[in-house]
Length: 578
Image 1 (cartoon, rainbow, N blue to C red):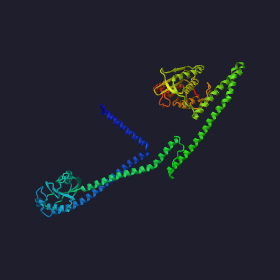
Image 2 (cartoon, helix red, strand yellow):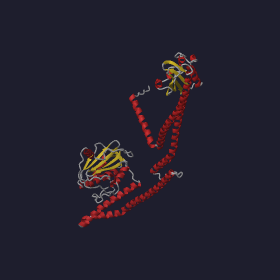
Image 3 (cartoon, rainbow, N blue to C red):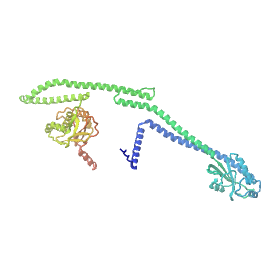
Image 4 (tube, helix red, strand yellow):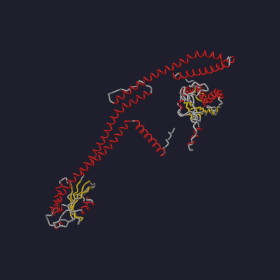
């Protein structure tokens, strides 16, 4: 079977791939920069060190160049002044006319060795030494082609601007310029310095116009400066790396204890209360480790005390709840006899029998809730999971609430989807959650319709109970699930709730791995939303239904585009944690 050919990537795909890899690399570098204190310190030290080394290197190199070239220039000027005096001495030995006829323009030193200028040039060549530290060119401005040179220096090495400056200045006034020198028979040029001046030939019988140029090669100085520059770069790079290594070492000595403290704090937060740090020395880091250990010990002690207190409280509630069941059973039997025979009693006694029956019902419900809460606190609550259609659970909870809704002149508006909403859940506990939400909505809905919505998506199911009563104050969305919490303590319970209904409902939702959330606003009612994963044990990442009712969200959006108008304050109201 032939091997399938790989599909060739288009240039656009290649560019996109490069961009993705670049973004990942930048993102990784950014995360590393944010997370590593040592990296930030070392990088900052290197950057600052590079800047300091570069600035100091530039100033140091400039000082070396200035000193080296300055010394060479002063020595060259001193030699040039001595050479000018020697040339003038040779020119003054003979008549000016004879000096002019001593050589034809362009002739070399060897052919004109007997003329005064030839003798002067030969003498200058001897003064320059065997190493030919510099070259000398003598020329006449009236005869541009006439020149005398001590070496094979090319006259084009004399800059035109320097020549013009020499002509403008008076005799014996020097002009210096740095340029490139060229030699005959050599292709490359070398750095150099040219010192030019006019010769004062007055009294020799010759016309003025002779110029003398000293061309000093700076090739050795350039090599020396290049070596110094290279050495400065190497030393600077070594210094930066050394500073980076030192900063890394110093930072590591500080960061490592801090990192160990962070890791210990994370393990302590995860529940490892016996986590401690090693104390070395007596410096600030050692005192930090000692303080951390002391804090961890005190925290462990407090947590242990709270655990013992919580255990005692849970045991007390459980024992009291169980112990009260026996006398409650006896009282219930007697109350049932009195309640059944209430028609034979006088009206006052019959009313007392009815009140006792109602309070016993409430007392039994409270004991049942306390036992359920104690099971949650002890971690003994378990789920009996099975695939259930959420719509059936909602219908059963609504059916159990119909009688109470009729007594409060309240109707249910059910909005159920047409297809089944199957989810793995404990139907008894979920039905109890919905029943508590419906009872709570009936008590605080002020007789208005209660909307029950069911929604589902691929990963979750949700049920929302919406009432149009007094609503919730800001900040009460979480407090409403606290045990025995009441927004208005002076308000009586109209349906005989125990104050534990919503707390137990939230525990049931958490046991399923779901959410039980509340929203409310004055004058707009409230909405409670139960969200559960379809598969037991799965992580819940979202809810199919919004927490804020869509009509409220639309009304807020519409008001946001209108001019604000002050409205009368809503009457104070509250919701109890039934």
